[in-house]
Length: 441
Image (cartoon, rainbow, N blue to C red; front, side, top):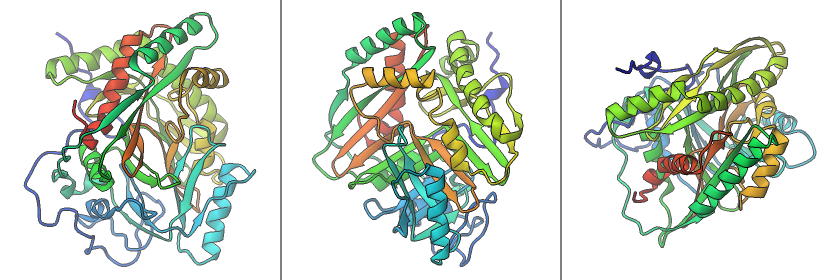
């Protein structure tokens, strides 16, 4: 008989809960209604940035902000296990110039403060190649609330997806993706690199405009303990998704990272699902893949931290679609002026989304993947003028524009990888977004 590890029973870290489907229930008349109960003024949530009209104790505040999100109006939504924020309008955009990104963000926040913006913060996304694309702005207005998972109203069901005739084009085709994985394995066995993450996309188009607020509702209510986002992505596009992976958060001098690497699709059969989870914890291939990521993050954070706690073995987190190996890394900054974004940039891209050695893995990705990743496998989140912030790995996501979606998924390739297994893993990862968009199985 297989003994289920204790990690299956509860949260694996303070920053990431195991996500379960939101239970069904009667639809309230208040579903998605404006947050009229919010108190005037501002309150802290976990010591974070806070803003106009926030009350983290009001039932319905977090789900109300979710219900108020409207796409296409310079609105930015971000929800984490500690807070929910909705930014409206644009006070200032982070400029694109030769200065390091953390310097540009700090300068933009300082200028916003001098201009009279109370407790300014930046919110948005940074590309996989952060030198190529940055979509960060200081909103004209920010409203905050507590975590979605702590709001009882988040248990109400999301509106069902309307039947849509999607035209779907895989890029690359599944057989081409499998061939790319096989070729990468040969390069790994030759010693050129030790890991590379290869992604593929689905390009979807519909006859009618896409209802992004409804998709966001379904993503958030399916996984209220994760990280849900919808932020402007430039040129009329929106980056929307629900990531299970925290890249880095900073609160004062406390630092938290929660890397995920090593995954297996879940099963609808309870016994098989438990078997897969237990097997993942003992899989040499997945444990090696995970160790590579943890070692890289430890090495990157060590120069910044007075203390750094790294567990010896990973635990498990689950989403609706996947089991993941996870490690919660905690540190105490030696220099309290180092911002969350500076730390995130020191980590990005981790081997969980790129590979190792990083430069070689980037080159292989460029040679194998027939598309530009853009914001996928970059980072999305927020930061305030004190340097506190949360930056999440941009996965389980899509870039949306009016009638089109480009959905992304990737898998870590090591020597023991098999093309059919990596194809199945990416297919399972697609389901997080495809189910929310109403794309038939």
